[in-house]
Length: 552
Ligand SMILES: Cc1cc2nc3c(=O)[nH]c(=O)nc-3n(C[C@H](O)[C@H](O)[C@H](O)COP(=O)(O)OP(=O)(O)OC[C@H]3O[C@@H](n4cnc5c(N)ncnc54)[C@H](O)[C@@H]3O)c2cc1C
Image 1 (cartoon, helix red, strand yellow):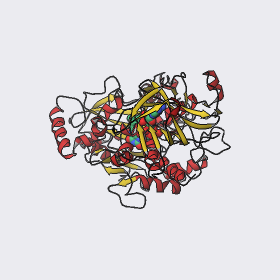
Image 2 (tube, protein in one colour):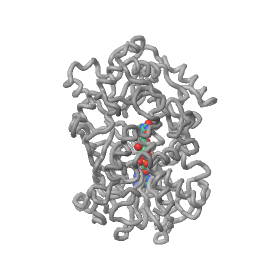
Image 3 (cartoon, helix red, strand yellow):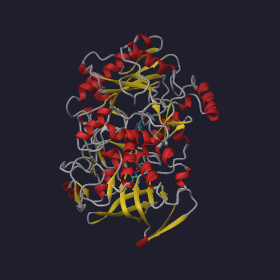
Image 4 (tube, helix red, strand yellow):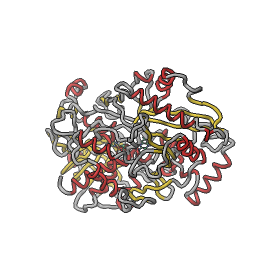
């Protein structure tokens, strides 16, 4: 078999020919938040060669880099994987749309750019779950190492890292109103959700540089990094399985434009496909729950029952109102003149409305009156459309709330042995513990904030729900009918102690039972952090890259 592929810079074309497949020290499968970080850090050593595989195209689309075009990236045909979940029993058997980034930068190229690390307590919980070395004091240096903080100057933040974190350049007047409403309802103002406490309401900081998205690809795979002779990036190349030599990972089978070939690893294969794809690749390679693999007709290389288990996600309930100021983001004739002016403004100054990430403000709160939050809020001065009609014409505003630490656990399972088929994603939302109660309590809190008299001058009418729910039964019906993902799946190759049979990787992200194989991405988190998941994923990659460089 013979095929050619081009390096990302387009300068060199190399050939991979049958048995003479190229060898690299490390082969990394997926150029997302973690994969981009790993490739960049490992190739800082000029003696190490890395091949970074990415199923999606280059990240050269305007919709990726212009923050306000987030909806386009989110629903784009070729920049994301367009997953759907299995029918969710507790959500009226609905199948939820799960976008995941499929381009350089992965989900960090389509996400809402909110920069949140989670609470210190989250990392203490990880340690207790067997993620030794991931306590707060041990992870803080890696958050700082990655960070290029533009405003806050204290010991919790870093200033010399590649990931630019800045205040938003534009905040919609309705978002400012939300913060005032939150304060009126008794929530403290918080100017740094990554500071001493997450509690309160305020503006989010975002991963943006000069008014443009700072994805993991922008941060870690800039021109200088791409020019490194020891880094080869192959885009539009699907890793179809890890080639196992017994229990040793020897390389990766790849598919480019329908043609299969092998890329071999002298040292290690590092799986970085994210919480959906990493367990899928492992299972296609014979690593996973033996029964399931046998059912699928796959011969078992390593029986790890935890692969694809422990799936956790943030489920979101949104209350929406129409509004009468016209300041909200909508595709209306009324808004057109302002939008055209703002487009020109952005083109010349990188300022203004087009720098908005939509979810500009929000906060953290406890529905039980405790010191640590159990819900997070995201306010959007818009009514977000769905996959079929992403461009909403109605002027309105939405307050999202989601349960930070759900008890429910789901699974990723193979639907077939075809690597191009989507796996079965079954988060089993709201099936355990107090998830439904907390979801309802969060939605009520969101409604309470939206009922603040501060909103009297702008609020027009209930949009969703169509009227104020009168009982918990009505709230429950609303949640069942309307709740959606907040896009934070994790945990499907969880990190844990050697005696935890459901653990997939050890605290150095090495796959138990395998040699030369790691998984490094959001899938290794043992438990959701109380916040958004991009910064923690990058932190994990920073930490593991340093461990590997030190020979661990
Ligand atoms: C719509 C959306 C909004 C979000 N908003 C925020 C936010 O505001 N703040 C925040 O902190 N987090 C947010 N997140 C979550 C955050 O972006 C993710 O948790 C994080 O990017 C996960 O990183 P990862 O490396 O695990 O996976 P990803 O970044 O998804 O990377 C996986 C990469 O691997 C590639 N890949 C997968 N399988 C293969 C294969 N077989 N062969 C080759 N390549 C493969 C994928 O194409 C992708 O590029 C959001 C996510 C989404 C989808």
